[in-house]
Image (tube, rainbow, N blue to C red; front, side, top):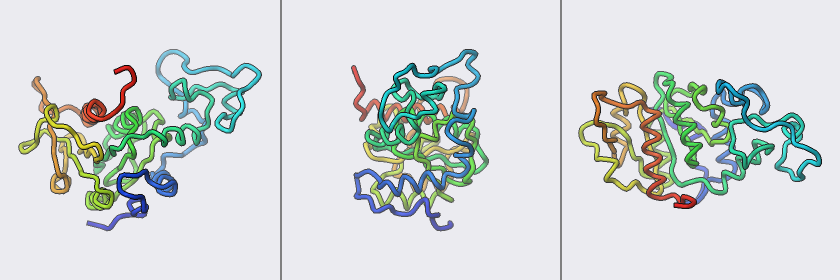
Length: 252
């Protein structure tokens, strides 16, 4: 296995604490081609829903504060963000999310440019994962992410050994998700509060190296004829299991 790239280096954060700002910037900077346009390009907008979404130009007088983006206030905000963040700059949205991110990480193996990775990233954003880790190929299919990767800290590792070193340095157990002999039912297992949820790619699932590095592998119960569900669906099920166990859900 090759050694970790700079994106996998130790950021010096105390175990159990939040990564330093430099660590977050490093994770963003090495995320491949994720920022291939300015923040107001067509990719920032919700497309394909058959109706216009978001909000139009903000009526005068405009709200004051550094978090507001003058261009969005003037032209409207059609981005894929919740209403709380309408007219905010991307940097302000990320900074606010960073104050309340959950303590689980999400990692996905990427050896054949799996189209499900975008969906995994989008779900990680929805459930507010600490970071997303792409293991294997640096470049990944961003279409399914719906631009949510711009609000998520994405880190690349060239191999499973690099991910394992990152996790070990932070006392983060790796929990694999796969439906193979030896896995324990996710439905009867309480996931650790601080952990890395590791997913394989569509078809082969977790690699042998991933199984070796995982301290626990969980399976998802299925009742139909298909042998597996896709990686995006499995990631959503596992992340929601973590949320049910550990997150503070308003009104619950």
